[in-house]
Structures are given as structure tokens and as C-alpha cells.
Image (tube, rainbow over all chains, first blue to last red; front, side, top):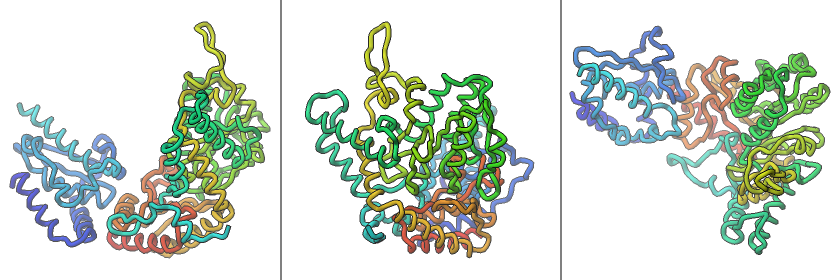
Length: 140
Length: 405
């Protein structure tokens, strides 16, 4: 699926929820189901700065796709990570770099975009795109 | 004046608003307090009726603004019981007050000198001293904390000696709400000839500090923690220090005469108040102090103690909830975690339920390191909070715990 298709799928999924609680319960479930990353990979150089909770992000190239793995010590943050990984992992660097992130507001998580949240959603997206830009550069 | 919580809540227009569809329950008072209509009106009145620059105009508005600003200084003098009105300096807030003193001492300290700070300090109270020590070569020593959040006073005794020039301690710790024994700290520092600066940012909304009774050298606070506006604060400076310390910044207001050869500085307070100050802020600071005194600090203390006791008892009934900072001398701040749940997660769910708390390290990373935790959820109560709001908090924490476990 393309990034756009996954984003639309997420928008449809989140539209099913009647209130914020169902939405957050779903995010918490997503967070719990996110595969844990190997503790040896949880090093400070993989920490994303600007998060109130700790977020570790790792990436690697598999064939022509970027594969992201990530973890956090806060469960709601992990839910957000799970959503971002679903959207951006297993995509080509070009697709990641050119993707927009309007879907975050559309699924009703716009409060996580505010700089005061400092939960790092914005930093996470930025870091994912930076990795993609780096892979783009090395492939050329 | 009898304490009528309903009537007091009417004074704060913001308490009527809703957040995420729920009535706002504001429990982040240690970060900043809400403002009563009386203070808001004072700000509107200033800009509507007598906004002018102070201390130099001969015109009526300038005189009115100057009178109101200096009246506010007088209000602060009386409130903090400073011996003289010029010992009360307006600043942009606690942080500037601390930096002003640190900057002054950078001219005085020698490499062999020592500074003592406590392990309970806010970042703003650690960084200026580290910078000062780097600049002067003086050594920074730290009074360690105990498990219950109080200071290890026996260690303090061993840190003091004739090289100690300054001691810096907060009156009340912002992360845990513990009241420090500043009377003893000041007395012992003075015995070795050291000066003392007390950070009263967290204290002044709860306690009326008497700078003469404390015999403190410097006392700083911020208006916004005391129902006043942001961007203004006070530095109380003993007159002797006002003579010894050099000016903080150059500019208008702080000079007596200027020629290209030599400038002579104005006397305090103006020596330390360069440039056009936050005039409206200063006047509104005075209005906020008047408002608090009208409620009365005894009444404030009683209401906050009732909230603290009730909230502590109710929260402790939640399985796995641990409160940090359990020393008996504390103000209405509860810093807690529930089991292994990240404070950020709890804070996020509480916000969805309309409850404003602080999560994180509260600018006091060393305290969090001491407890080996990433941070806490901090609920801090003010006199305008109600028992019903405590119930709402407890209910919400239970709900969050259920969702997150």
C-alpha cells in the first residue's frame, strides 16, 4: 500500500470511534502491540530529542525500502509510534520524504502536534524523514 | 473575612471555562497561578487610563503611573516586611533576580571561595551558580536530600566554613513542595559570614515571608505565582548589599550623571533597574498582593492544608500510587506516580478529562535522578481549588490507571 492509502485507512479506522476515550484506548492497544526493540539498540544516540517520554528510533534499508523500529517508555507515545511506523515503514525513501502528515490532524490527534506537548510526534516525523533523506543521498 | 470558596472562585473568570468538554480543574498552580478579576481589572485600568513612562515625565499621566508603580513597591515592602522601600527591587521574575545576584557576586568571588546550593533546586537556581563558578573559579557544593525530600542538614553543617561566601536554597521545593528550614540555614550561614539568597517562587503564594525576621540577604520571587501577571518579580536586597554589588545592566534609570568620561550610578533600587520596567506588571503585582492579603494568609493556609490532607488520603487509596516528598513540612503539592505507568501517559489522559497537572521532571532533574524515575505527575493546589476538584482528580487518576494498566 502507498503512504496515502495507509493514511486513508487510518482515517477510516479512527472515524469509527465515538469519543476520545475509545480513540485513546485504541492507541494504547496499538502501543502495547508494538514489537519491542532489542534493549541493546536502546542507546542514547537513537534517542529523539525534545520528548518528555523517551523515544528510540532505529532504521535500516531492506531492499529499496526503509524499515523503522522504535520504542518508548510511555504507552501513549508508543501508540503514536505504532501509527507512524504503519505509515512510514516499508516505504521507499522518496515516498517518505515527499509524504505529508495532514492525516494526524484528521484522525483527531492534532493536540499531539502542539509544541507544548513536547511528546516528540513532530520530532519523530522529522527524524524519520531525515533518515529517508540520508538513504536517498546514499542511493544516488 | 470568612472563607467562602464559592465566592472566591467567582473572582477567577478562567475557572468557568471548559477543557475538552469538561469543566477545567486547574491543578498546576505551582507552575503559575490563575488571576483574579481584581488583577485583570488593574491591568485594563492601567492601559485604559494612565499608561505612561515613569520616573521622568512631568505630565500628569507619568506622575500617576509613577505613583502607582511606587505604591506597588511600598505594598511589597509592607508585605515582605522589608526595613526600607528601596530594598525592594522590581525584576522580570525570580530567574532574573537570581541572575542579578549571581552577576554581582562574579565581581566579588575569588577562586578559593565556595558556594552552597541545595539538591532540591530548580534548574534556574543551579545554572547561574555553575556559570558563576566557571567564571570565578569558586567551588559549588551541594546539600544532599533525604528520601522524604528534606535536606540533610547535618551535611550542611559540614559544608559551611570560612570560605563559604553564598548559600542558595529554595524556600519551598517546586518539584516536591517541601518547606526547607531556611531560618536555620540563614543563621548558620551568617555564623561563617556567608550571604544567603532564598528563592521564594514556590513559597510566596502559601507563606508570608518576613525578610527582617529571617534576616535574609536576598529574597526573590515571581508575581505570576502569586495571582499576579507574568514577566515581573521582586528581589529583596539588604541595603548593605545594594551598596556593595555593582549595577546589573547599563541603561536608562540606573544612572545619576553621565559624561563620556564617567558615569555615576543611581542609588538602589534604580541602580539595579535599568531601562523602562514592566510598569503595568509592577502595579498589577501590588494589586495581586493586596488581593492575597484580603483573603488572608491564615485562611489560604487552612484551605490549602485541607486540600492537601484530603487529596493525599484519597490518592493513597489508589493501588500502586506512590507520593514523592513526604516530609511533614510541605505545601499543597503532590508529586506522584502510579506503578510503572509513565507520568506523561497519566497527564495526557487527565488533560482529556479537563484536569491540568504538570508531568515531567519539573525543571529539577537531580531530584528525579535521586529517585531513579523519569518524572512525576504533580498536582499543586491553590486556595481557590475545591474539595470537589480533588474528587475529580482522584476519579480521573483511577480512570487513567485503568486505561493504561
